[in-house]
Length: 558
Image 1: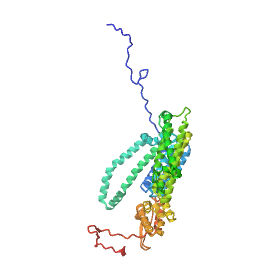
Image 2: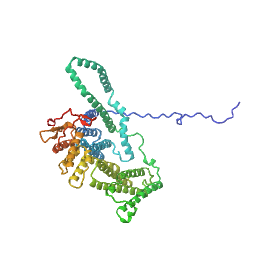
Image 3: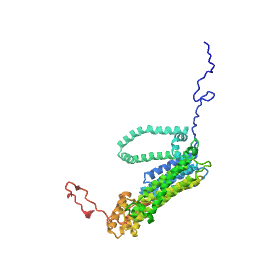
Image 4: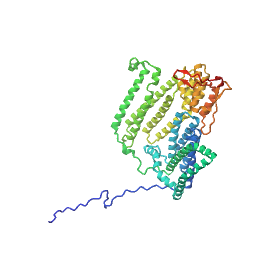
């Protein structure tokens, strides 16, 4: 039968094919290859030595003088290895200064853990920003720069196999494998030989026992050193050879903006209106004409006024900062690339209100401190709010001058604030202020419990209270001094001096774990002349609630 269908037969199409019928093959990503020079391997050796020093004299040695010197040396080696053509930027130099200052904190304060934690956070952030900015000056300039900085933490892990293969070239790889195989093969042989030698000789047995007693800790230290060394090498190579740069297109913020101007103006305007009403309500404290808006029966209390709302301020400041950031990044711009003037005005009002709100809260806290003294929470929150105000000021400037890199410098100033705070010593500052305020008559009372919760850096100031007129305070201060020295430094340094006035003396001997706070605490401990505490009877019959008479304590022989 004849086919009258004149349609051209349709051939099946090839999925994912081009017009010629060939299947498109995805381009394979080329693996990066690194040709290390002799200088690279020399620096790897330096990194290995400094990593061992950092672990042995830093991490496992109270993180004091040894940690400070090892950290500064390691950062300097990183900078020399990474930098190209000897060019430093303002950001890298500023971070280098912060690194040195924050490292010194560990030598100044051996047991002020809050100051040390703040210093460690600044030290870590400054090191990452400094080393990364040596090869890329756009770090933290804008949103894309922030993503680059975040990628710096991921890139070393991604490039670890490539770096390892590049470090161990074919000839070196064979040598390493042969050495590693020999070490593994000799372990069972050595185990048999050493056990036989131990059985054959008592002197060798004592030597092996002495080595074994310290070998466990040494093995742990070496294992941690290897981990630190690997991390340092991966990070250094990633920064020097710019392996942290993504091959994808830079982040285009214009394509992600989706918030329209009417929505933004309404949203921000309502928030600004609430803040305006709040500012109006504050006039009730200062003008009698507005006192009627206060709650019925409200009595103006100094302590309540100074304390109320302080900690809520930081939450409001954080919310406003997030609102300002999202508005700058997500609101659709005009044709000339700028924000709507109304949005700029509202954002400026919210920012200024936040700064005034923070300033009011800080002034309240200053009044509260003048009346009741310093605590860790009062000091740290005040510094944190000051840093928040700096960042908000930077965003206000950025609203009108988006080309200025204000956020980067605001972060630097914020880190400087916390560095200065840790350099002064949080717990040292608290003891200094509270003790002097009491002795000078500014405060009628002093919170001895707060002093007893501080570290060894407070001992020199608490020692001043041992000579005050109040006998209770003086005796209490002696007890606190002994307890703080016992808890933070240790009684192994304490010697009972029976020949002189029945007091305690202390000898502080330290090398890599030396810290100035422990040195001055020991000196103040000796100068205070803490009375000796006679031992109590430890054996006690709890069934009759009477001390056991069998054990006689001759107090003259103690």
